[in-house]
Image 1: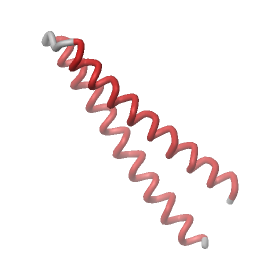
Image 2: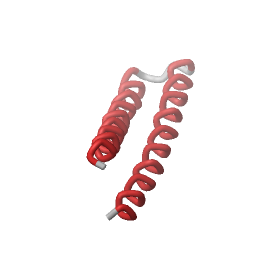
Image 3: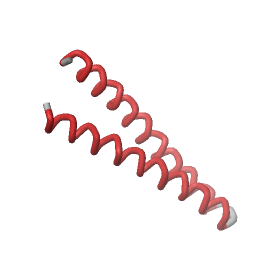
Length: 71
């Protein structure tokens, strides 16, 4: 059971890292788009994706913290 928990945490950690990179990239690109006069629709699409990824990140972190509390 402990090996499964460790593997799950490692996988969650990698997914958290990937999500953070994606969010950072989207925030950076959204700002570039804003500076270059992108439409409100384009900016909103980026913001919506950032929000979706932030929600996923929060769920992963919360799940990991709950898993650690149970261990």
